[in-house]
Length: 291
Image (cartoon, rainbow, N blue to C red; front, side):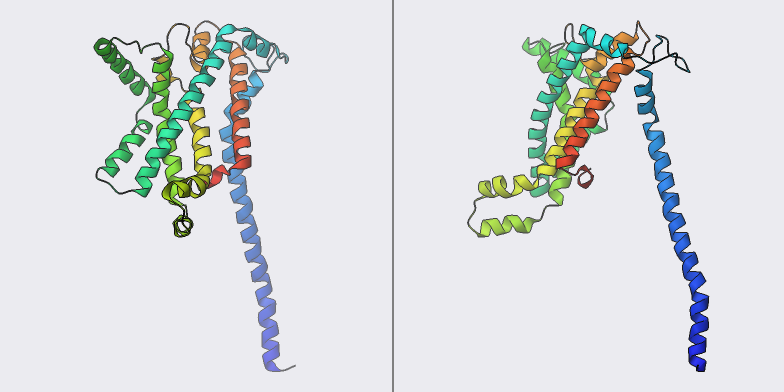
């Protein structure tokens, strides 16, 4: 064996342990990162786990360890009319606010992304403004505004369905503008230009090319708008009226006089419903690409 071959053999023998050590470090780093991510997710899901667990406790006063497990609190939740009516009203308001908010918010996002006009940034800030306003402040402002409108036009807004829906539309528009804008920025304009070069008009191009490409953003905006409206308490608390109480407000009213796992049962139903909606939506539209 030549001297050069001996040196190469020695270098290879010395490099083997170093390469193995580098692979071990990379593997340890990946496991450490996964462990940290798992720990973070565990802390995030602890409240959800405890709510689901408490909803099955047998005793009326929550204490640990539980004396047993039962489903009677779910039966109690479905038997109470305020929860049934509140659930129905929350669904109604959330659906109407979602449809109107996503339609108008998507139009605003399209104008902001695709056109240049004076006051464009101010218009964008106006649409996104409700995201930075605390819910209780927005609810108080709307309540005072409704009083002024009632005195001026002699039309009822406080405690009405349309007044509540108008307030919830303010919650849905910012999410729509944010998500649809992100979807539009990532679109390839060359596809639209190719359609126009082939003879398609602006409306045909928008309907057959742009709108289908915007679908992920629109679906994500619809989902988050519905959740924001359905779960809202702070703004809704100041806009509901007699006989028009949403589910979050009904839960708050129930807690004023009783403390038992019924509230945990109602919250568990909400968690399962929203989780199912997100899983179904992610099945057709990957939310991770938009959010």
